[in-house]
Image 1 (tube, rainbow, N blue to C red):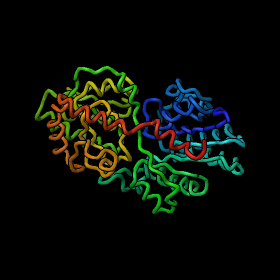
Image 2 (image 1 turned 30 degrees about the horizontal axis):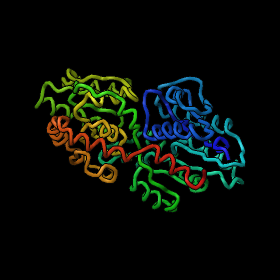
Image 3 (image 1 turned 45 degrees about the vertical axis):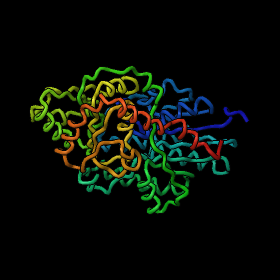
Image 4 (image 1 turned 180 degrees about the vertical axis):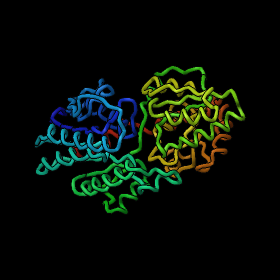
Length: 388
């Protein structure tokens, strides 16, 4: 049977803005690129995702016609329901051949059309639904560790995830999580152990290696978004201590500039803006070049399901200073430099102590070699095993 008769539908329909990419988006993008070279791939995406998939040889079904940067909980709810409905209507197909349905996340614009497509093909014994789960929502108003998330957006995510998980137990053949901790949580919530699989993130090693080495322009770099789990307040506190001990320190902040209004305000109030550069959102070789131009990645997250940014830094040979999270010990072993969660003084000191590590080629090469075990080619094949 020709590979082009083997179909894959990828639902990456929850993308809100082109200026940002979650771990689940990253997986969907890289796996789709790989699959589309061999199989008949259909992408179900919003307008905001079209540019990132421009080099992907796949059929593209758009569920929206224009971009928006609104993150209002009410807007997200309405937009997600609209996209889910569009996805249902545009992928109402039945096939007799091998069919892989991949929902890139448990968000409703991804998962609901995927569940419906699986239901439509329920008589096809070769139809398989795989759903990605980037992270498990914390209990509302408790948040991530000692950091409160709270608010309607957290409540919305928590409740919709409960509904999606209920449907996943019925329709999904496999749920992919990013670590063993989340796998156990799903098993404890009623999933059978053989229906949950751990799939770590990966890096595009060839693109990183092709990005030229850079002069070390920045002492530190932060890549992320303005979210409680990312430890934005801790970034400010640790940066204050770093600047007190090394006044000429330079920090690059990478992410959608519109999301860092509050961060800029806090830095300005503490007279810490002088040596901070906001670069905006970067991806691909532009991001890797900036990582290579930095000595240390500051990564003060309170919660991560994996830590894609940390992996990309390791692949660039950049030391990572982070809080000691259990998931890092599972995925990255001893390759991160960690301090107790919430201790901004220790975080600042560890960052300062790590500045000269970039000069140790044996250390940076060890980081690069370690990162190669996280490979999108390998994980993309594992999903298709037993079907294609």
